[in-house]
Length: 150
Image (cartoon, rainbow, N blue to C red):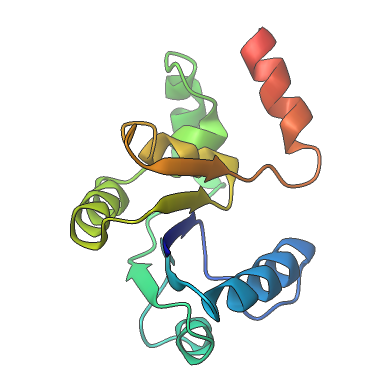
């Protein structure tokens, strides 16, 4: 099975709960399946090398998530009031990431796409012919339920 995983970062080093969970779960999945891990990161990083070593075929997208400080942060927050998406979702969007997802889906033709963090579901909603899984860690399921209800 061909699996494409989307995430905000490569889950290495495994030094947080999410990274520990993602790294260990997906390295085991990569033993029996063709797994590709697309995230913001750099090809020359320790994280990229660790995923390669464990058969996870990393795909690095130059980091473009804006800083959460300074005047521009508050301007982005204000402008997001007029958006249909929560700030946590819109702040993680980049045309480069979207383009890389589109190219990868076209070339790889995955059987399933796994979003390892809920804001990344925005990149896969258009792929109706591919199975998609959105992982909601911790209490995110309740947060997203509240977004839906309100």
